[in-house]
Structure formats: structure tokens, C-alpha cells
Amino acid sequence: MKKLVLLFTAAILAVSASAQTVEESKTFDNIYVGVNGGLATKATGHAWMKGLDPNFGVRIGRNITPVLGVAIESNAYFSNKPWASTGTVVRYLNTSFLGTVNLSNLFGGYLGQPRPFEVSAVAGLGWGHLFGNSKEYDKAVCVNNLTSKVALDFAFNLGVDKAWQIYIEPAIMYGLNDKSNTPYNLGNDGIKFDVNHAFVQLNAGVIYKFKNSNGTHNFKIAQLRDQSEIDGLNAQISDLRNELAKKPKEVIKEVIKEVPAEATACPLFVTFAQGKADLTKDAKKVLDNVTNGATVEIIGTASPEGSVKINKQLSQNRANNVAKYLKSKGVVVKDATGKGVQGVTSNRLAVVYVK
Figure: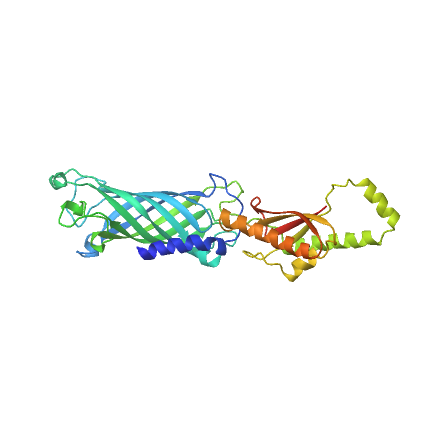
């Protein structure tokens, strides 16, 4: 179980480093529904093939990111071997709240749509209830238990839109508070992961992913501003400044008369590496276009990866480093503020507004 917790913790910490920036999802985006069925058998104490319990279930879930998701699943079991029959069609019902980690996207990154084949880890807690109409069932003091499911989903995404998915899922189901030597092993013996109180299960399922507000059935990578586009814009600004410098002074005076004193010139864009606030040589080259004695305002931003607190501090560090460099060049810095993430397509920038 400790390894399972570490896996989920690692997944959460690694999402920002491994996943592409995707478009913002609305509340009812990335929701799916599915059905599954298969066989389960008690993990220990009997021959597996002589105690197979068929089951059928429904799963409803939502993918929060291309890596992380949540789901609710409920499975009905139509046998309760190796114990005597409880006398009902549905012998046992297990309902679980699950967390999912798409291992393919976690370690390989999201490519814009699901891969044809993916592997996901599934784990969570649930509630089980035993149904019955027999003398032995009437002897049972406890007919409910706390459960835990740990599984791997080997999934195949189908169709042009990858809206359909079929999967095979080996799993182990623990009765966390089960008690030995009681009817049906149900009791209250404290919470523990005991293989003697577990079932192994092999199910197959099919899932349909509903259409999202972005027009697809999956996440869509955000169209962020390309670095070459920013470099080209900065080059155009530099060319315009150079052309203006070559104009006769009389023309320049006329232009100055027509532009209000508080007007802002075209901004300069300074880019940063992911998670970094250091100025590169290219960044300093852009900042060198600001003339000595000019007054500027600086806005630092960050991309959506990472927490709000980290992105806020990172954007402030970027603004501070730009301000420090410009001050060393004799530029007057009126304000330098980190704004964190601005919208869902914010890039890793510091924007310099020259007054």
C-alpha cells in the first residue's frame, strides 16, 4: 500500500513536468461512462478455478488532466464462492471511489490525443454489502465491509476520434476490515491489507467518452505562442525603432506631437525556460533595445504548470530579474509585477511596456 501511495504522490508531482499544456476544461468535459464484467476468486485458501464468481459493473468517471482522473464504480457479484450460497441472485455489491493515473501520459507526455494503447493505474476505497436469504446468512453479525481496489487497466482506444475504449483489468480487491472464522469472513477486525481477506479479479470493459466543449472527445493541446513568433515580433519592433531613428528630426517632432505623452510603445517580450527566471543571452539582447533613461513597466507571467503559489513567485522573479537588468542599463523601472498565470494560454514571459 505504501508503494501505491508513493505512486500516486509521484504522479501528482510529475504532472506539471510531463504533461503538455492543454486547453481549459469546462465542468462537464472529459466525462465518460462504461460497463465491465469478468470473474473474481478468493486469493487464498482454495483452488482458484473451482471458486469463480462472475460480476458485472458500471463505471462513471472524469479525466481531470491527461494524467489524473477520478471515477465511481459499482460491481454486482452473482456468486459468493468458496462459501455456501446466500440464496439471492446478486450475492454481493461493491461500490468504490477510484483515482486513476494514466501511466502512458505520465511518462511519455500527452500527444494531443490518446495513444492506440495505454496503461493506467487504478486504486481507491469502497463499501461492500452482502445480500442473502439463507440460514447461514442470518447468522452473520456483519454484512458490510470497507474495501480497497488496486488494478491496472490495459486499454485500447478506438476510432478516429478515440471516443471509444476497451480495456482489460487485472485487480486485487481487499476486504480491509474482514475477520477470519466468521460467516463469509465479514466482521470488524481492524483496517489492514491482508491477502487472506482479498479476491483477485480479471475484468474486461468498454468505455465511451462524451464530446467536450472543444469539439473533441479528449483533451486538446493549447495553442501557445511560439518562440519563433515572439522572436519575429521583437525583430519587427527593433526594425521599426531603427527606421524611426533614421527619420529627419522634424518628422520625429511631428510624430511626438500627435502621440499623447502617456501612450505606451509596442511592448517587448522576454521569454524564459520552463520553471526558470534567469535571463538568457537572447533575452538580454531584446532588453538592450530599451534606451537609457526610458521609463518602463514590467509584467511577469508563468505557464499553467505548477501550483498557483509557485507560479506567482516565479512570475515575480522574472519581473524582478528584468527590472534589475534594465536598471543596470540606466532605465527607469516604474513597476515590476508578477501576475502568475494569465489565462489558459499564458506563456513563460516578461512583458516590458516602454512609456
